[in-house]
Image (tube, rainbow, N blue to C red; front, side):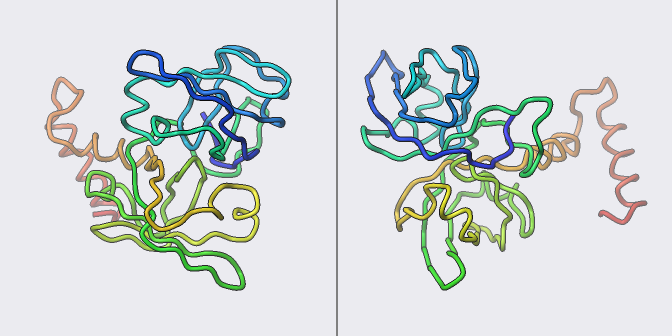
Length: 219
């Protein structure tokens, strides 16, 4: 589990193919502190297991599934990446619940900088868009963000100077592909509202849930 608060910008030091997957070596400093082989590090929003490390870098194996769903399969040497170590029980929770499970890719459609920060429009298909709402949470390239507005074809974000300084967001350009993880709560709600799921009497449970939501004024 992650917070979406990026700890460090790393750099891809090496890429090698391994069957349908690939090995990545990431140059880093801060995220190496206390890290052991087998620990999890989020790379541009994708949770990966550390397979090797030294004093200046760590390595991971990117499976074929992760390579196809996320942008990790397109990484080349020298690319900058957002890095975050997994949470610990004593960590402060400053972002939102980020699993590091990329739901799909989006494309930077427009970027507009002003004196206070940067606005970006992300194009995303309906399979992701149905979970994204204005003022809701979304993780883009591993960064926990609040959605400014959303419609059928994508959503808009605004970045403050702190985010621009400490993530790779400041280097976004039109056409860049990004990893998107939608809010897990939205997916759970959808699952619960789907007819006949998970219960011996699923339809009855769905009716009771809808009744409760209506009583509380949510629907």
